[in-house]
Amino acid sequence: MIFVTGGAGFIGANFVLEWLSGSDEAVVNLDALTYAGNLQTLSSLQGDDRHHFIHGDICDRAQLDRLFATHRPRAVVHFAAESHVDRSIHGPAAFVRTNVEGTFTLLEAARAYWSALDPIQRDAFRFLHVSTDEVYGSLGPDDPPFAETKAYEPNSPYSASKAASDHLVRAWHHTYGLPVVTTNCSNNYGPYQFPEKLIPLMIVNALAGKRLPVYGDGRNVRDWLYVADHCAAIREVLARGRPGETYNIGGWNEMTNLDIVRTVCGLLDTLRPDPAGPHARLITYVTDRPGHDRRYAIDARKIERELGWRPAETFESGIAKTVGWYLEHGEWVANVQSGAYRDWVARQYGSGDEGRG
Ligand code: NAD
Ligand code: DAU
Image (cartoon, rainbow, N blue to C red; front, side):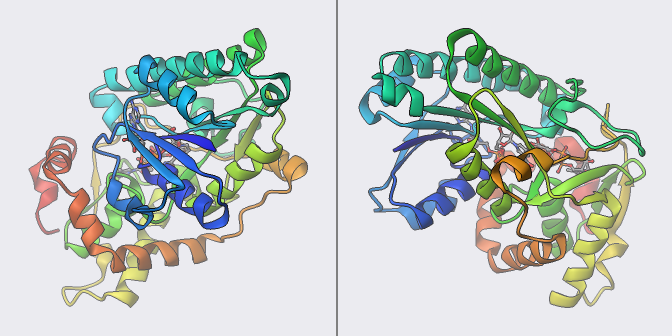
């Protein structure tokens, strides 16, 4: 079986659902169920004995040791993290705790378990660390996209904590021989993404007639990848990635935030027209994110060359599926918009952004 951390979050849950739709290999899924973790996303797996959900914390070494000893996984796929840049600016401590201390604790538990395996199992074992393109810093308009050799230049507490975790993973390979692989992926979008991130926030706000808060001039660029494509890339890296290597994963799809928001508005105008007028009327420029990285872009040639992975989805097909999914899953959205979520929105955007645009 495989041991997944953070499998009740956005990408982790998509990964677990897809894994079990294509394989009978069981999954142990450890998740602390922070505000971002949602068991409702995994409700289709209720009663499925291939899925073992464990409510717990990657900082809890004793629990990790028990899980390794009981389930004897052949691999770890490590998604668990604090993942939202704006939250890291308001409260960096949780990011250092989970992303740095948590990854360290997981590495140590994995190392203890792996060291005691027989030689064949030791060779086959993998620790796949899921990381981000944000560790590479910010690009100028004419800079080449991030290759795996790009120096780390993290700019936010989130990206600094992920960079620290990447360095720990690298060191555990070079010093102890733990068979790790690291993936650095660009911005994901798709079903089950928490509506604090750009695309689901814009969909949910537009449907509610609320303002669409665009930071700064809206011209920051991200490289967007449909989440199922990220999950497929992770499966390839887990199966055939070379231990000690890192693989960049991206969509070859650079877009400004304004273009993203306008695309979402256009789709909603067709699928759910608002009698009050085009959804783009709700676009509102708000104060920029401190230290806001201007541009990310991924050079994904290594994973294509070595493992044959390329994204299957275009942005047009992926965003249409995503908007359609949110339109059909109003109950999921309503349930994640708990009290804790509303407190966050009020703190980040002020009460003005809660009203109709
Ligand atoms: P998410 O915030 O939606 O989910 C994170 C999950 O981790 C949640 O279920 C949460 O409950 C769990 N978690 C948090 N702290 C924990 C702890 N101490 N112990 C156990 N579980 C804990 O995040 P996501 O967007 O699904 O991202 C998953 C991973 O992928 C992260 O490592 C992130 O850095 C990385 N990543 C995300 C993106 C993206 O665009 N979302 C892109 C590249 C890489
Ligand atoms: O690049 C990969 C990263 O992508 C992941 O590592 C992170 O976990 C994930 O959260 C994401 O980080 P970003 O900061 O790029 O994503 P976010 O959706 O928060 O913002 C995308 C862009 O949109 C960014 O330039 C900020 C802007 N933005 C975001 C929000 C929430 C707005 O203009 N308005 C908003 O309200």
